[in-house]
Image (tube, rainbow, N blue to C red):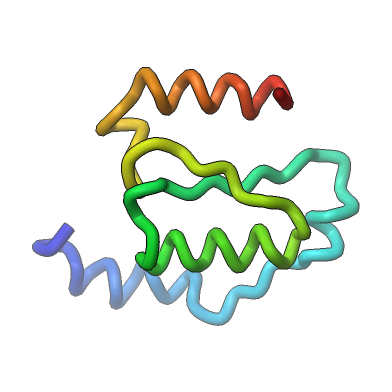
Length: 89
């Protein structure tokens, strides 16, 4: 990531800058929106953004194991929780 940071900031990040989701549409749409955060990424930009999104949607976030890439660090625990979330339990 560090070697690609200049590219990421110059090209990829710009696609997100200034975007505001349609919160009313997300709340009233037919699909259930679940916001997930990594327990080990507290304080990081992605974690803070997810908490803000969850607050705007009026739903608590689901805390997944590990950090931003918990699916890679603790795949079995991540998968178990993901299956629970997808089942709605």
